[in-house]
Each structure stands twice: as structure tokens, then as C-alpha cells.
Amino acid sequence: MEKKVLVLGATGNLGAYSAVELKRAGFDVIATGKRKSDNGFFRKMGIPYYSVDITSAEAFDVFLDKDIETVVNFAGELPSRCAFNPQALISTITEATVNVLEFMRKSGAKKIVFPTTPYDLFHLHETGLPIAPDAQREFPGVGDHSIYAIAKNAAVDLMEHYHLEYGISRFILRFFTIYQYHPNAYHYADGKMRMMPYRSLIRRAQQGETISIYGNPERVKEMVYIKDFTKVVVATAKSELEGGFYNIGSPHRVSLDEMIHGIVEVFSPVGNKSKILYDPTKPDTLQSMLDWSKTKRDLGYDPEYSYLEMLKDLKTEMEEEPFKELWGSGKYYDELYGANV
Image (cartoon, rainbow, N blue to C red; front, side):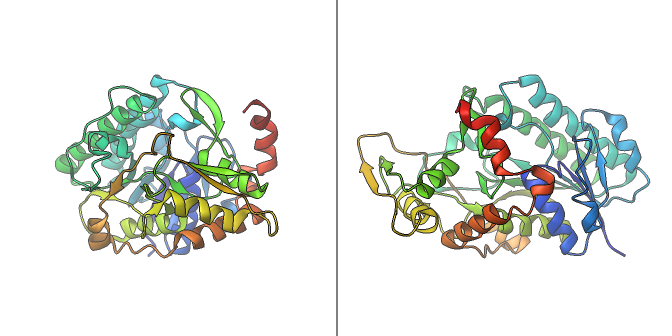
């Protein structure tokens, strides 16, 4: 009998790919989102779709008799997807987590998978060392991610309580950016709508424009591809462990220099390659690393995509837009936001 997995936030970046991969892996998947309709995207894959308001406890009653075993909760507001709204962050992350956990307690669901942010380990950034998954959590006192980290921490504490009190397994996945193609290349940063930095770099490379590398070009980033990330989600759904914190990092940390040269190699047109300049007078980029040895040990995490392979696959998805029926096209978002950025 197929194990049933409820994916919350299945119309979002992580949720859509995860729901599809879980179905491919043989799970009986139910997809949900706050949108009224998925435009028939999931139905074509044999995945039923429900419109669910996660801030309403009663909204989960429809799933009480579905024999759900695992809840993958990728729902909730993101600071990068909305103007500053602390109430929305608390209600869709912390308070909604109570609704999810109460549904699980009532229905007998055994496992929850939940994403969290490395901002809960903000005090350990820039140490030059990989951060352990079970390091003491805190939150940044200022900045546009402060309340987001507070909401995530509170949600994780609630899951720990339900684990200890009711035996619900919890898999807390911590990561920086998960790289993928989404047609919406824009997000909020410091309260303003902007093109995402890596998408802006790709756009410049596509147009053969000069790209400057600021600060120390040897600073490294964790660059995880969505198709490696979803393998972790599948592994959590299969696992018989009680869970815990699991960092998700890249197979080879990518230096800023490698990052820019790779983007130019893959996205600049032949005969019009972007020129790369260096400006060491500018501030260095953030450098924080995650220790994912526990994820490898417990969940068999072994990323398959090298950085260049990731870029090439991302380029293919930009051209083919496999989630266009669900998300729309890149042209739509350029027309919607591009003129104001």
C-alpha cells in the first residue's frame, strides 16, 4: 500500500518540485496551496489538489480520514515574496504550524517535514567553519529576516514539543537558497521589489554585459539544486528515524569566481561572452557554510549535480518551462515587475 503524503504549499517553489518527485518515488501524494486552482497541473499527474488556508484549523478537517502518514509543510509567507508583514509571518508559519500539528495529532499522522532558515544560526555565520546542524539556535536582532527567523524558531519548538509529547517525528531541513528555475525572477529585498541577484547575473550574461566581481573572489557559497533537494524530501518520507535538524549543502562549495565564470560559460551567447572584471575595493559577499555530514549519514544525501550541471539543467528549464501551467511564464513576470525594478 502506498504511503500517503500531504504536501502543503505545493504551488510554491519547493512544494511543486517536491510533490512531483514524491509521486515519482511511489508515494500517494495530496497537494495543497492557498490558490483556488492549480490549473489542472497536479491532476494530470494523478495528484489531487486542495485549496487550503493553513491559518484555519478547520481547513484541515477534510484530511482527517485520508490516512495521511507524512506532512511536508512548505507553506507560509517568505520575506522575499511579500512586503514587510510581521503578522503574516507569524500567522502562516508559527500559528499555522499549531494547526498542522493538531491535525496530525487527531489523525494519527506520524511525521512532519519542515524547512527552516540558517538565520537561526546567524551568530555562527562568517566563522569560516561549517555550521553543525544541532548548533544552538538564535535569531538576528535586526534586519528583514529577523521576525522570519523568530517565527521559524517558534514553529520548530512547537514541533519538538509534539515530538516529545505525541511521538511525531520531525525532520527540520535547514538551507540557504535552493537554486531552480521559477518564471518569477523578482523578490523583495529591504522592502523593495528587485530581481534576484543570481537571476540578474544570468540576465546580464544572456545579454553579453560586463559583470564585476566584488571583494574577495574566493569567498564560497552553498549552491544546492532543487533536484538534489527533492531527493532529501523523498528520503525523509521513507525514513524510520525520529528526525531532527538536517543541513543541506552543496557537493562542492562554489567560489564567487567559479559562480560568475560558470554563469558566463552557460548563459552568454557564443561570440558575445560577458567580460568579467574584479573590484576588490567593494565589500566581500557573505560566506557561511553548513555541515551536512549528518544528512548524508541519516538520509543518504549525496548530491548529483555539479555547479555547471546545475546551470545547464536550469537553462533547459528556462527554455522548456515545465511548470508553466502552474506558474505562468517568465514573460508575464517581466511585464508585471520588470518596468519597476
